[in-house]
Structures are given as structure tokens and as C-alpha cells.
Amino acid sequence: MWGAKVWNSHKIQSFFSDTTTESILRTPVFEEVKEDQLVWQYENHGKYTVKFGHPQKPIIYFGEYVGVAYHPNESRSVWNEAGLRGVIEPRVQQLNNVHNAFFDICRNETFDVVGTVAMIAWCIWNNRNNCVWNGLKDTPKCVAMHVAHVMNEWRAVNIRQQLRQTEDNNTTGIQWQQPRSGWSKCNVDASCHYESGRTGWGWCFRNSHGAFIAACTNVSMHKFSTLEGEAMTLLEAIREASFRGWSNIVFESDSKIVVDALQTNHTGVSELSSIFMSIKSLLHCNSNFEIKFIKRQANMVAHTLARAVISWSSRKLFDYVPL
Image 1 (tube, helix red, strand yellow):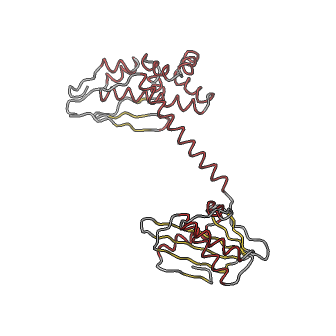
Image 2 (cartoon, helix red, strand yellow):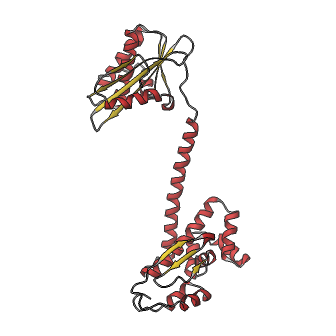
Image 3 (tube, one colour):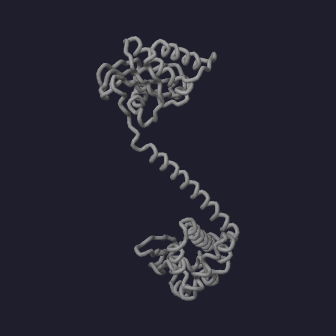
């Protein structure tokens, strides 16, 4: 017990078995220790060493941990509130051992049930410690509600991770593809930096063998929207190809909205609509130009150029591979 330098035997008996209680009460509490300090140290074989201001004494084994998590009446109420008393109680009665019951659950129940059982055990143990050391104690219903809240958060995180993993698997292996023989391909991309008020873009031409033809980066002090930046990049690349008299070119963009908009007859008076009209006019004059959508993973050259240009001050045209 804090300050008086004697154990609170009543509280200890309410949480531990008779054997453990006897061992704890035999542990001396020295007067010269002004304030006890609790330190939990994990060791091998699932043991936790409990250290105080006096020499190290009790070692809490896993069996004692799960015993506290089930045997007391209030702990059983938590299992009941959580709806899993039917999972653990028959096993305890059959196996006559709480930690064996836990291991049996781990071997035979679903991953979700095992996770919930482990969380219930931890929350009961944490509630017990909070009562011992801080004098605060939640009701079984509150403990069960906390378990449900934590498990729902855990499931939500796992669902997001699984979705990201699925997306990664679906995009794994997506690479830039060479155009058909006799054609060239131009990849375009834009990068908007709203903090600096700049918009950068880049494009890169390669032939049917994948060999470099030309590339360009440009930066505008005008703060375009993302769609306007993507459309401006495409417009500049088409203008360059038309100016040089190139033909049979596939222009690829990772902005599906821009590509889809160019396939429709929609008109408007916005700045974006004006850019679309200019692109359509150039495509009308160059019937062997094509516009296609690709995934970002296959557009990394243009993506890299668009991001790099933000640190530059002017337009740069490359007729050789930029280093």
C-alpha cells in the first residue's frame, strides 16, 4: 500500500489466487524505499517480471494472466457482456485450466474470435491494474464496450490495408508499352503545387522501339486546377508534334477525366473548356493523332518530369535524354 509501506491484503486477495496472494504478502516492503516504482519487463517464454523499489519478487506467468482475465465474477460478467462467455466457459470447465482454454481457442476459432478474446483478456487485465494502482475501475459493461470499440477500429484498419494490398496487386506489373510499328508515343503529366502557386508539366516522346525522341518541361506561375494542368500539358505536347510535322502519335495521359472529356461533344465557356476546344481543333487537323488513358504506373517518365520542373524557372526542351 502506498505510503504506509504495508501491503493492502484485502485488495490483493480480491484479484489474485490464494497461492499468488501468499507469495506477494511475503514480499517485504522496506521502509527506506520512499516510493515504490512499478516496471513491467517482458522476458522469454511469455513471462513478465514485475519489479518494485525493493528486490525483484513475483514473476507473473501467462497462466496467472489469463486466470485473472476469467476467474473473478466481474471478469466473467465482461465475457458475458461481450457475448463470448459461451466461447470460453465450456472450455474452462472441460479443460480445468484457463490458459489451456485460451490455447484451444487460438487453435480452433476464427481469427476474428481469437482477436476479440485476446482483447477482452487484455482489457480485463488493464482494468484490474487501473483499479490496483489508480483506484479507478470500469464496470463490466464499460469494459465490453471498450473491447467492441477497439475491435471495430482494428477491423477498419485491416480492411483499408487489404484494399490497398488488392490495389497494389492489381497494378503490379503495369509498365509502359511500346506503340505499334510505325507509330510513336507521347506521355504527358502535370504537377500542381498550390503552396507556391505554380503548375508544372512534362511530356516525353518515344518511338516504337522505346527509344527516346524528345521531351519537354514547362512551369507556369498561374495556379491551374489539376484538370487544367493536365489539359495544358496535353495541348502543348500536341502543338509541339504538329509544329515538327510528326505523325502517327499516341498521346497518353493518366487523367481519365481529361481523356473522357475529349471524347465528347461538350462545350463551355470556362478556361478548361477553352483548352479542350484547342486540343480538339489540333486533333481535327491531325487525324493520325490519338488520345488514350493509362495508369499512373505506366506514366512515370512524364510524372517525374512534371514534378522536377517545379524547381526550375523556365521551359526546357530536350532532344537528348535528360540526366
